[in-house]
Image (cartoon, rainbow, N blue to C red; front, side, top):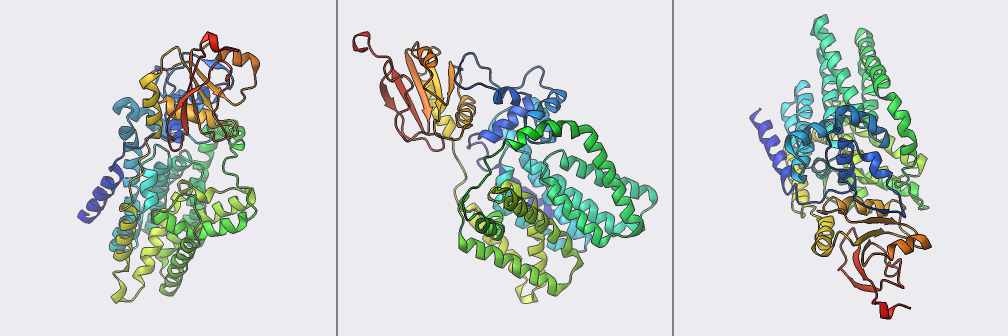
Length: 506
């Protein structure tokens, strides 16, 4: 136990390191909107209309309640549990980046405990400590812990459900009828909560179905089926109607599509290099054949060692890793998507990967028992020596604007030629850090004459734009270009346009 506490403390320190130095990015702001019950209002903001006196949609309101969050989640593509907990957390502790992100940090650290409990259940407490330590320093585990998103909670609940499933399987015959009911109820509650946190938890839970079909028999199998059925019926009754409302919103999410002709090859490479990207800090979205070879080597050698060792305790981790990853790959191939590119979707498989690697290393000759320690050290070195992800880009824009922006100026978010949601994305990320709310325009088409006349009534215009095909100016006849900021990564430029003196007007 002291060793486990030391691992947990070290994991917490890694996840708290520079936790508040990164801007809230768009999805994290969506979490704030969801917990305030305002996501639908933000998504409904119109384009091509000058908007005045906009509220801070991220702030909690008097009517920000669990019931409001539950009902307004139909405007999102996620279940509500994380956002319900986030609402309570914000009411007690506040809204600063570090404070809000502490909630997923706590979930992330707690998710290490079930890994140790599972291997202790199999009589391998040392292996459990190694698996927890490997996960504690793995890049993806740290990465999702530092984001205000549901992934760490989903990982915690899936991990708890795996531990409960293993414990039920190993101790069923020694329990009384009452204890069996209590533990089955706890397991059903865990899978219900996991599905109420993120739908992709179901991919990992399908691995549990295979585990049960292989290991459980008779009364144990029937009892498990009863518990899962009860959890499924309650989930369908409570949340099913909202899921039906979310389907249109989910269907409109086309940003994951990949139209490159070598999509199949890229998906195979992503499947192979996922172990490397889960463990080590790598360049985002960049395929590397060497990483794919390394990842394939890690998986192949681990499976070979597990097959030679014939250890029953490896099955749960093999299924925990391969079932969700294979299903993600199938979804990518079938729908032309790139889910595997985004580590947050594959993060549910991290404990499975760490567990199967550690158990595989335990099957090596005694002289090689230091391999898990070496792997943990290398993982930590690759992850921790790289700079922390610090990107106060939106704050830079907000500071730049706040220095000179007046309430009578017009602020335009323009991204002509970019994805249709980009102006709204820029508005969300920048406006959160702006101390005031000037007249705002989300612009996709500057050819509207009536809109141009409205824009021309403002003395000064500021344009935030990532465009590289020229200076974005909807009214060049009346407001010539004055100056532009330096390029701000992930945002673009801030342009200032000024009214021509009357003598210069054509």
